[in-house]
Image (cartoon, rainbow, N blue to C red):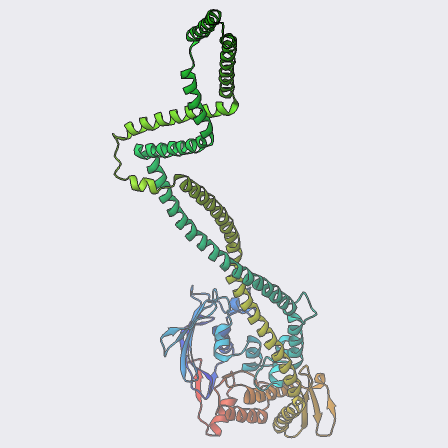
Length: 606
């Protein structure tokens, strides 16, 4: 036994107020005269389970809600205890607004439920929608089924395990689902769009991987450049410190000038070697000049020549020697020639002094004197300075140092420019690479979705094949169901009607024992009730495991038919709870005459 009612406690509902009713799990006979509240109890059970929502998920005005609203009480509520699979559940309902609570009496916990679904307690306990409850669980006299309810019942009959299943509807749903997923050619549907997006993102990720490899190389270059910058900066600092120390120390400066002028002196001396001949001739000419007389001495020299010549002439006149005359004549001429020759020699020397080469020679001499003078001054100045580190100064090549500094500065400038370029390039790449994780995650999700779609497509196709195969056995199941109903109807009617079957819309087709086929409009009210009972009995016996409520369902039965129907219900009560409401004594008399035990609830006594 799956679900049965243990107790009802009506706080205020219709004419009942603070009323409790206990039930057994078997056959329960509720007796009450007309207007005593039998239908109220049936409606209370229905209201506890499904509220007043007529199975619709939107709350709206309901006729029953107003019919059973208490007149003399502001309360409009009730409680029921149900047992499901051995566990007791207490359901409380406020009928004013439909609010409810499902409480597990075993775990002492409230069952989670969606408040907006007023039908949930019935769906939770019975696992049935309101339409099935209304047409199968709760039976009324001359009860008619709505089209929606009939469709639900048809599905219940057709399917062994799921009352809400239609093979044709399922195939249509599955085909629609396949259409929603799409194929490779349906470019606007999820399947093709997902594949296209996977290809696009995969291409982007591949590009990003290439970019990351290039970025790693750029990072290596950047780090190497930074190391080079650090090393060269340290070297540059050392060279600049040496240069600055050289510039700032006066001893360094004097040494620099001393070296400079000594180098210049060496150069001048080397150049003067080219004028050695001028230096020698200059000395000899100076000696001859010293031997020559000055202008005043020259007159004396000439006077000596004249006096000597006159003396020779005098001697010639005295001695009459011709050679004396000749000498007197030749001597002045020879002396003049000699003087002229000396004069020519003097003129040639003067010409050499005025020669350009000689001028250059003199310039070098003057330059040398100046350098020597500067070196003497530097020597005098340097005597007051500290020359303890003169060896270090001598080792420093200031020009080479300046050249190295310049080269290092150029190298550092190029390295820094290259690093700026690399840093900008890496920053740009980093912005792109930041999307790689998101792209990979998105790709994983898309690939997962694609696999799920492929699985779903495969499952849908498998489901379609399975449904088609199972549908082939529907006719056999339907024939067996029709046979069971026919046997029941034949028994109830004492073989008056031998066969009954239902079409796809659950419309009965009746065959009499004479072979005549009867349409539904030719059936009597009593027989229609019998057909309706037979259908619901077979459904409950074969499809459901819940309590069943009968409210004057057999009022049109004669005593024999009622007796047979009650026997079927008693057999049914071995597996499920039966709640039978009546205003007649016939049911009680039949049960007592057969010595059958049952639970009687007299509404006059509560």
